[in-house]
Length: 180
Length: 180
Picture 1 (tube, rainbow over the protein chains, first blue to last red):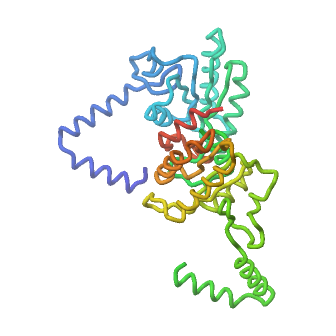
Picture 2 (cartoon, each protein chain N blue to C red):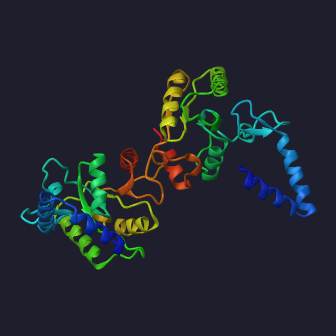
Picture 3 (cartoon, helix red, strand yellow):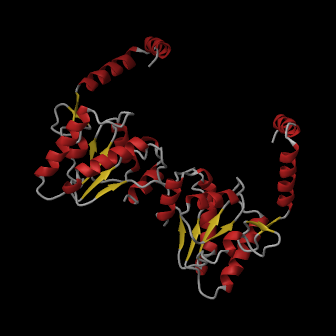
């Protein structure tokens, strides 16, 4: 946030009535109680052992989708397409090199998968279809080769509102191949 | 083209050397020799009975992709994904109503398919994944029900360079469903 936006926000805060301010204060207090899930690295309440998704007994635990960001998880949940578990890798650096924290997270996932006894049914590498996403996905696919029966990625395609004329080759080819 | 752009183009033309002007003149002359293919409504030379794609014996004639524009055909050919034949419907109006010329084109396609004896192996309705495209595709699918064994549409998805976080529900769901 830049200085102009910060100033505007500060003046906006001074305009709030007392009840709203108290509400905001308690929301900020709740933020302090947030922690990361040991298993998937999504956010959880500090008093809970795991996050809401990992805690949900109705979600399949033999399919895991690796996501880059917490906001990707929210998009997935809003679309309501996936009933497995997630794993948050953390925002990828532009250079395409995994940070130490990200390597540690992947190590943790390896340990979790190793403890399962049987290989995972499916590991979905749901990283963005960008060059860094592709690069990282290849890297992860190699590392997790023996730990899942199937390693998949999201397919590309022409998005809603998009035009065939301006589609890139890979997206058009995928939209064509997966026609239904 | 607006008046400013037209003026600029006119002055650009005055700056050309004589050889380039002659080339441009003959190119414009060649444009006059263009005509529409009776079968698919793509462009063809007026001396040829059909367009280059319809004339090509190596292309499968039992799969037809309905496209909106000639430029969509060029995108398909550049991507090199399709070895069947095309059918150009013409640019869809924003209101979503088919123009008379477009209805006539579809009638022609029906006649062509009716003459085949056996139903087409596949009719791909490759219209844009927009609301008008969807609407028109449903309309065509109903009309051509008995004339093809299979009527398909291109799948949606997150395009190259796109981000999961900002994907619409339908595109994310399709990318997920067609993961590979």
